[in-house]
Length: 289
Image (cartoon, rainbow, N blue to C red; front, top):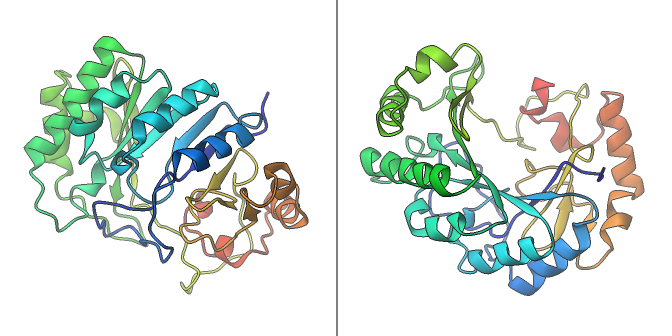
């Protein structure tokens, strides 16, 4: 069994939307080159069987998406992609014909979280068109995410959720109400290889926020790590600006980075639920654990 369940590889931090729940990034915007990507996957394939094209940015924007998927397949890695789905129609042939693609996560909350003039019928229609083709010709799993519900801390943009769910029910010919069947447990299977996941508004960790706690458990460094577009290795996919830079994979071997004194101290701290890193102390996501 390999060390990590998944490793996030940020193939770009460029995005085509400005979601109100996204912290954006202060890092220089760039696209990972094929050469850099191949070096990364060849360096990490002994640690995991699957990578996620995710941290910041929209992976479907990458001009070499097809080539990156081919490289992943050549190195025996399965790929999960998280997308705002605006470009799914343009990218569907690449995704549907790639043996590397294991799962596509659709962040449906992106629709309402933007001031962009997106058409909901077209937006959902392109997503469901992809899903139906994926069901008919591949084993790709589609995960529909509505992570925009209100919590006692945050207010989510979710007034369109009922309309979104109604369109999904119609386009996928479900024959049942997503809201009635899936809201109790906030997750459920809709049909073959199609799932829905409904949750409170995602709260990114913010080093400047006033909330702070030293009692936190996290799966960072335990079942996952993330590699940013410039090669910076961070403990998890929620470190949008590389505040906890453990090292750079282009400068230091990955095994030396994840076994460094700082990384080991973080791992032990999570185990003991006592965290030293300031960003982790201010992570709303980690409070779930």
